[in-house]
Length: 252
Image 1 (cartoon, one colour):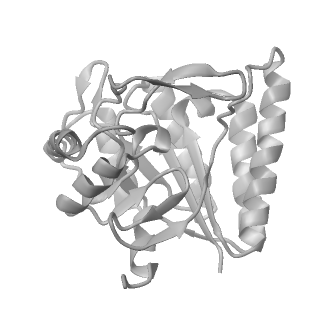
Image 2: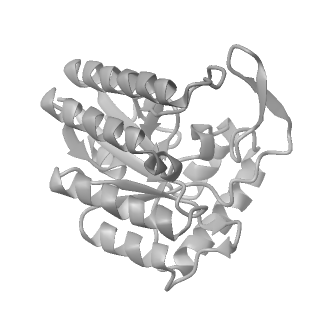
């Protein structure tokens, strides 16, 4: 049986308009009986999230309605340990926040992130690293701290334990930026649709990850909803990320 997982990230760095668009998108999913997993970064450019913030209140309501949340890093500060090439043309990008951290540093950052999140009244034992990259030290730190789920670029599972192989599907591209943005979005939308359907048809886990900035473009919203509908039509059953943990096989 195929499973459909849909996540939303980037709202901590967004504004009121981003939150309004997210609410509309969440309503579209709710009408389809598809829960949304919120990837929450507890500290943004204006400081930590706080109890009483509009975003915190909205996520609290969404979780009560059946959505879920994962801790999504601390403040998304890039690793100072260097840069890495991205794409065929060798563009350089800073390493993601947890992509190269050793165990001790990852433990400190995760502990701080968890403390900030708890101060808002939100809590979770699931983690999705920024950029979908978690170093071996980060995985060890997650296990030490009792996290039950880590969702990286190619898998999701128990830190240090069994995993499901499942590649995350996004609108991001490693190709050089196209001069015609509309054409690029159409091409990425078609790719998202085909990947979602193929994964569902073979009984895999369809992981569609949407960013707040994606919701600013109607083409991407439509493409995401079309991919979600197609995955469901191909047999994928909606779930939240942490709902996958009981389905993991027992560790040997």
